Image 1 (cartoon, rainbow, N blue to C red):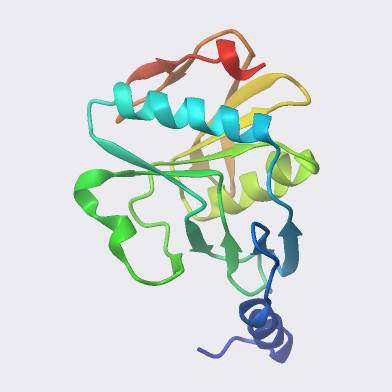
Image 2 (image 1 turned 135 degrees about the vertical axis):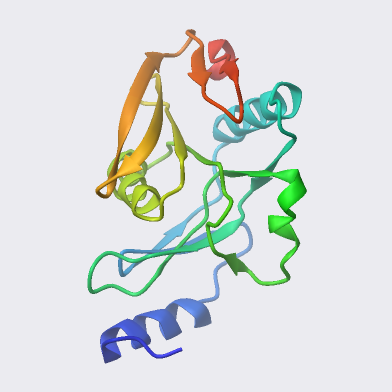
Length: 187
């Protein structure tokens, strides 16, 4: 596929040819290639706690996929973003995760989850705006530095509305989830 500028095309080709060490992940976010090391155990603990709750409560059966690659609209003038949320939550009935490709469009994704690690600003701002631009209905951010959980919802005009609670308080997840996410063990 050709893009508007040679720089966009070169960036995308470089990104797709990039080989990362085992356990590392590469993302292309608004024209910037980001390579992240494997997450800390506490990061994965929080991801596992969220995944476990997703399987227990939703009225609609959901799948919580760790490290599913999504291709999303890029910022104006940038190649499409290729992001890997910590969790991608999709309705099981839609079979969205059966594609053999590495990067899938966000159509049907109900929620993405990020747990902050060494560069929290990327999750707080850049990824939030990228997910909103793609129209993903819900973005759950677990901010380990601020010890807060924020649910971003109702994407409009390239951003979300947000509801934030400190660790230890439950945060309500709207339909199709319809339950309060327990954050007591996120500390």
